[in-house]
Length: 71
Image 1 (cartoon, helix red, strand yellow):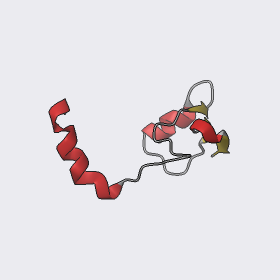
Image 2: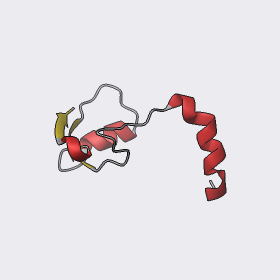
Image 3: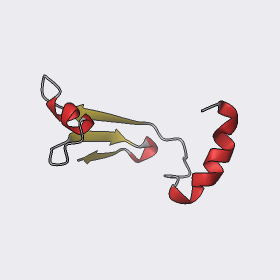
Image 4: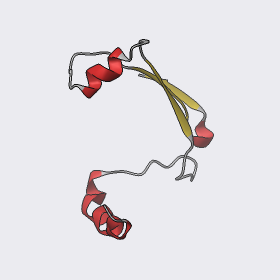
């Protein structure tokens, strides 16, 4: 997609998305760590469309909130 189309695409999908705002911050820094086997079995299962699988991830941060979540 060409950069000039971004505005029109955003107008089309705006009702499908929400913006996360924490403490008046709209641009939030975060770090997500994904845990997998040494041969990336979980990633490959996801990539290949396997629905019954496990995913372990930790999201650290979200800007000023300092929250940590595990999935």
